[in-house]
Image (cartoon, rainbow, N blue to C red; front, side, top):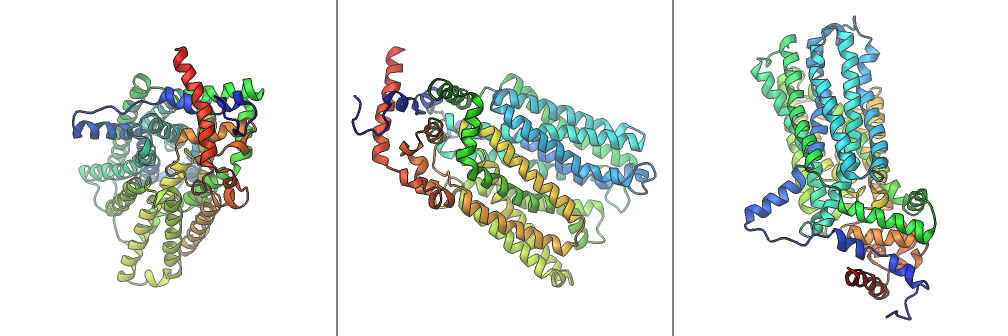
Length: 549
């Protein structure tokens, strides 16, 4: 029966503007598991194996910086005296791998919405494995200049694969939670825990290097060239073993995202049969409606990566400032400690990100503001904090504490929300673009920090923390408690030119950004009673499909 008070004239179109039928196709009922251990194992595997990509990413990317003292010991004529390598070329490795990451994010982000999550994940994992193999065997090259060229190529190629891993892993984690009724209400937790592989990779890499340096007797002030080569090769080989497992899993066990498969088909069908437009129209329509959200996800990521990666790149110099007489082995211990502090931030974020009293937006805002305050203190009190041993200890606490708030804040949330605030048909594309913008922030930090003094780096990081908080407050909606299928349903109304007739939870004021509420005034469409009437009509389609089957 058609309700006369339904406010869309074309009832046929109204019945098409729904995710009810697609949700029914990909939803898996919650299965009873025999024991608490079985339930825990299902929960653990749901994020641990998908998180191997981010584990490998952090393990390799951060190791490129941690192993620089070992590279200098291996090839002093290249990295110290620069007799065999141009000094400018030795600095290229700081930038070129990030360029590879950016290209991978943009390319595979777009491809992920075309070829699917499974094939995208397979390809990027294979690239990461081949890059890791090249990095592992590059120290065997005897010529310093040839080593440097091969090393730069391998790091860039690996970065290209890592770039694709960002949109693939993030979109897949969000959609995997959506399709499993047991995990649907824990979507934020699952996505953040998948991302926590980054923190674990950073921590494990530092531990592996420490253990290997101890095994090869490299705890003193001098680093043996042969032992340094062995440490570099073995620590890369560990990542190679993880990458090999990841590739085999994705080629033989990974299934396609059912959310992407069903929703993408539904979006394409709606575009062609109801809107009578081409596929390009889908992306342009999404951009027209969601550009404020894209501004939030991309600009907040710029602000975060400027502070996060800038300070990571600066970390070795910072620790040298605190402990000028420390050996490379001792400095590595402090690096591992900082990684451990950061890792706790990932897990704390996962614990509360789905709580409505905290959620995504508040977590990102608080994290940015804490970074602003802590970095501002470091900058303002820089001379006092570095004038005495007691001050340096306080300085170290502030620096490590900022690492915690970065993870228990924007570093986790930027990765999460970019996979949640956009509809399925453009999720990977927009996530990849947002992540690429973040890496632009990292490049800016790497370049700028090389031209300013240490005190200024903290003032600049504080400024970007404040900017991130302002962007978050203005443009970021809060998707805590909002299902992905409801977001897709809202996007279908937009695609069909019927957005003014959408009255569901997607325009509930608590799920909208400040800009969407006060400028675009999307919340004026919110009407739960009218939305229930729409759903009654839309449920009829599902009933017909069941009867036809």
